[in-house]
Image (cartoon, rainbow, N blue to C red; front, side):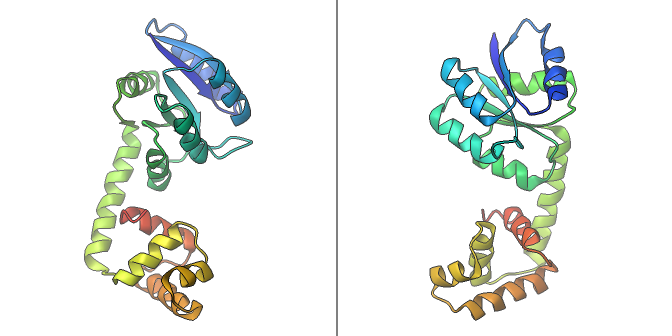
Length: 209
């Protein structure tokens, strides 16, 4: 029997998951909670095999919470449950230790498959998201092939993705702020990207973060 915990701030989602799991003899839901505080309390009382974790909770960031949980409970198998199908979110969750990634509204069969897969110690990613990753990876490889960046630009791109300010980048790389700004402008021009969010996404596609 695979024991399961569910954390989501929407009762409709929780009820839908419970309905899909209620008659499954191989699965037992130990608890449902709607925020990070209650989750930590429940986990201290009873640890499930699998945790279905909403990325966006009212009191915490599910991505950061995932990392914290796996430090406390390294054997816990976390499945991210979210509306976000962007590859950036997937990679952040996987880097923080999640074993699975499912979109909300998933059908019963892939839900059960995901639970069984991660409980066995293997990764599971929603098929739709797998297609997104494949397409964006192809885009990333094309970008790498046709838009060559200097080593310094790659360094700065990685630091931008890690939320360094221009001043912090300058201090870390022993450059002037003006030089950092010049490199950022060059990145924007080369990659045809206008926003910091776009640069962060490019860094993930290139495997820099």
